Length: 290
Ligand code: AMP
Picture (cartoon, rainbow, N blue to C red):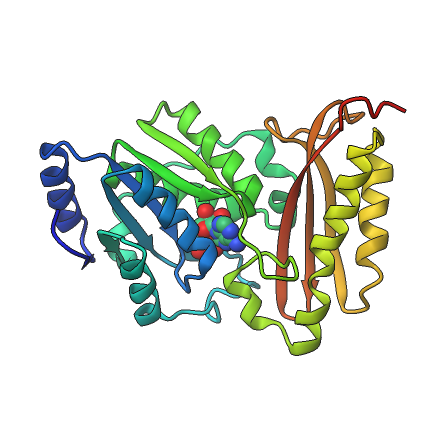
């Protein structure tokens, strides 16, 4: 296929995709809100490794922010984004205007399952409806493809998988592991909001998740005890304001009564202006029964 290009209209993208498909190419889609970092780059790398053509969409979706959130301040740097995309072998950056993408928004609210009401859904009640609206529009525009999402937003990954299942869309969702800074902080566009003190304390989230995961691995089965261990660790950081700590089943996202084998540990926390989320898988080690 031809070299790196930036497209802003659906018409141009569809004509590109038509040509790619007629040449027998498989399509990878990486939806993003820009201000790209190594976390996004790992999704692009997965797509370029596995698919013939990689489309990276950049669209800061106003619908997934509530009025009191950081939509207008959300960091943007399109020229650095384009460099990163080009460097990692992206074929097309699709950067539509709101007018352009809006015509593809579903006209009625999307039915979302119960998973959208807890954790992120409880703290940000309109968030998943906003995510689903734009993701459905992108899936409609791009059509049959593999779409790459980060485990960093584990609840979002679950919601997107459910959307594909419920609407029988011709999309395969590929989840990619979280990319972290050296001290364990998950890379995020929002990390730029952190002051030096907040940044140095923010690695407590990863440390707390690890404390929880180690306890599960040793055979602790009580979700309450795991949650308390995570909370107590985060509370050693004076700048951390916990929003939630959770233990959920990795596939259903339901809260188990008791940890049987494998769960996902979740945290959301404010450090000053920055709202950070993170998660980690936790698995009971064989032979670790209490
Ligand atoms: P965003 O631009 O924040 O909407 O993120 C776009 C995609 O990149 C989502 O699927 C995120 O889950 C994923 N992503 C963001 N940060 C990371 C990270 N640190 N590691 C892996 N994937 C990430």
